[in-house]
Length: 170
Ligand SMILES: Nc1nc2c([nH]c(=O)n2[C@H]2C[C@H](O)[C@@H](COP(=O)(O)OP(=O)(O)OP(=O)(O)O)O2)c(=O)[nH]1
Image (cartoon, rainbow, N blue to C red; front, side, top):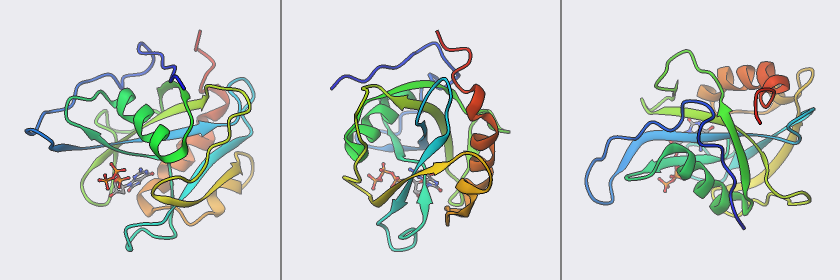
């Protein structure tokens, strides 16, 4: 499976600071996966299965950027590992801080829009999650889930911005 990304979209191509061999930066990347680029109506949410402190809470699929990786590359890798699908990544969901959304542990998360790269592909909860849900973008749909608290403002931004997420994409 190939992952199609658009390197020029968004600002998520900034390099991360190397911290030595095998080290991981504190940058986390998350995916706001929409069911359709032109007329999105649902967002994919993933329920954490571990660690214990996060178990049962919902989040954006993704994870930590590894040393030497760009954020987009890291996100495509995490999504392949966690969901078993390739995604077409779009721009970054704008955050109040250019470094990204602040997480509870002091880390930052940058969230990118995405849609499935292959028609008919179905994300599966392969790693880190025990349940996936396509939640409606309209009404209170997405807000009903028990999100990781730091994700709540991101969910609001995603719900507000989904309709135009891919509007400028080629
Ligand atoms: N993936 C993801 N992580 C989030 C979100 N919100 C949030 O606070 N986090 C936190 C949880 C974790 O402390 C951290 C991401 O770590 P992770 O465990 O997903 O990263 P990883 O897949 O690279 O895992 P690992 O190899 O370090 O175990 O960011 C979110 O929406 N998605």
